[in-house]
Length: 115
Length: 115
Image (cartoon, rainbow over all chains, first blue to last red; front, side, top):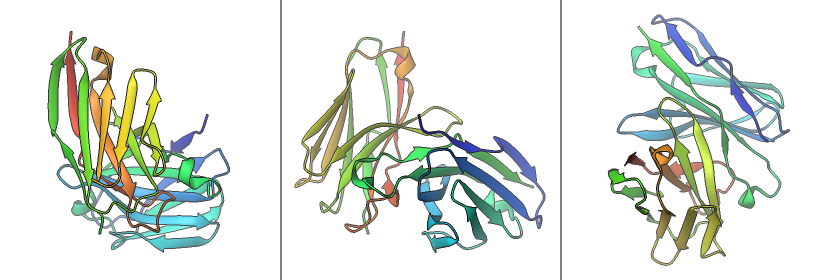
């Protein structure tokens, strides 16, 4: 069974702090994603990666960066946290091969509050 | 850009009734459609994936149909149970050429099944 693990369930940070959200998957998936989920706005794609050291912007990349140094790990970085980045952050992964038939696997989410 | 709508936004039924959840999308050139379940404060769990060549997919009490030409999918849950209480989301690739995790999500249908 695929497991996507997000290191923190809840985080509280101060405005201006640099924040790291970590995600690890154990199924050797090539593609990994960071979404954020907000009431009334649904899920929106921040960044994704289709290979080690490869990344592409999603729909709302402003204020975020990512790092993928190893295949199993995909980190989301908030360079200088702001209150409008308070949200639920969801990491997901999917294999590259046979992706038409493969569901997206999500982690349990990290609820980030920026004060 | 692909837009996904889910109706109704919320649904409350007594235990034992069948559930019917609707999803519509604006661009019919999709490769697949996925249904997810989300429990409060948790990540998303994949329920069913329907490929574009399929008309329906079944898993236990769940059945999802897909009508690409009309841009609609329906999730049926037979003989509902209190444990089915959750938010159900549908998702399709963001554009006709995207099929590997870059998804456009509906806002979800919040379901409550009362004992």
